[in-house]
Amino acid sequence: MSMVVDFRDAVVVFNGFPALAGATLQVSQGEIVLLQGPNGAGKTTLLRACAGLLPVERGGARVLGVDLCVDRQSVRARVGLLGHANGLFADLSIRENISFWARLVGATSAEVDATMQRMGIDGRLAQQKVSLLSAGQKRRCALACLVVRRAELWLLDEPHAGLDAAGRDEIDAIIREASSSGATVLIASHELERAKGLATRSVSVVAGQVRA
Amino acid sequence: MNTSTSQQNSLIHVARVIAAKDLRIELRSRVVINQVFPFAGLVMVMFAFALDNDSVLSRVAGGLVWLSTLFSLIIIVQRSFAIDVADGSLEAQRVAGLDSAGIFVGKAIAVMVQLVVLEILLFLAAVVLYRVSLNGDGVVLLVTCVVFATAGLAFVGTLYGGLTAGARGRETLLPLLLLPVVAPVLIGATRATESAFTSGGAAVSEGWPWVGVLAVFAAVFGLGGILSFGSLIEE
Image 1: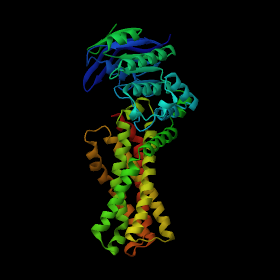
Image 2: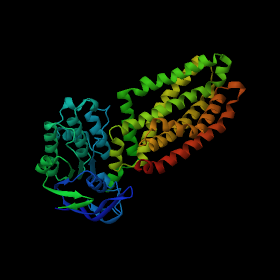
Image 3: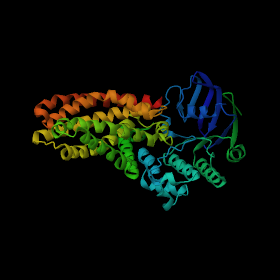
Image 4: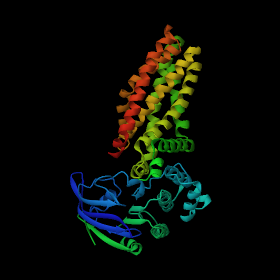
């Protein structure tokens, strides 16, 4: 199993404050790792640093073999970050949203169909405008966009937020399926019971440091 | 990034997908068609009521068309970025590492297409309401003027739209920043259009230097946007 995330004493300064103060974390391919910790501990900062959105000031940080201290741009196409927003276009249908990302990465229409089938999005639902969907359906659509983008590392910030029990079960099934297909998943969540059942291991993020 | 990914992330490819997406959203939502076009038409009609003098109207028709276009540009640009900011989609595009120059060009092309349709309607309205006329040379000048003025407006509008997209109070900030910057387009396009209409005894040939000004403006802001849009949305 290759190392997907390899942070060693990584320091990320955000607004003049060391939001990550020497974080060390190694994650192998196919793992589902739960990041737990109180608000403001640095979970979201860690996810955004892994996505190449925040510069690592000191220490070592490699994601998918790319040294983030040298190049933060090239890793982005291979990483999918899903935060509190879904990143969807409300006036387009589910299919059009997925097709938008498919066209950007050169995926075919058949791949869009296969992704929707894999995510349990049937023909009728696929034509629904996103603005008319439930929170769970929107989340499913957002995750389908990550699948069609062929994201190798999924960074999910509170993926269960705002969903009912059925919606949460759907999201868990999708994450497990992605992991079994070779994707690596980092989840920041306060839903500890549920997320622990989903994760292959969990780590604590406290005051900008990661503890196993 | 491998070669195939680089090709998929090329400026032209990203621009084409972004422009198609923005235009598809407009076709689905019809906000510009149902709200901006009638708004621009109303501005033209209100000017006709306010000035209420055929000779004055035919003389200032060019300026009124471009003023209506500028007001509409603000709404079109705000709408263009609102659809991307509403559910964090612009952030998603940034996270996905899309070529920011491609995003800029794609959004500008979508704005350009909407502006051109609007301008055609406004010029038709000017012919009907303000009784302006065009000869063959005037048509060539007018079309060239529309091409460069629209490109300049779309580039500068997209650049400032990106700048204000994440700002608090962006609805009021955008016109405040944008209107002074597009003043050269308003002046140049108005002069060129007056020449095309031969308003106030102007000759068609007098309009071409102004078209040159519009072309330089479009080139400067097009290039400026391609180079700086990434930093703007990154911040």
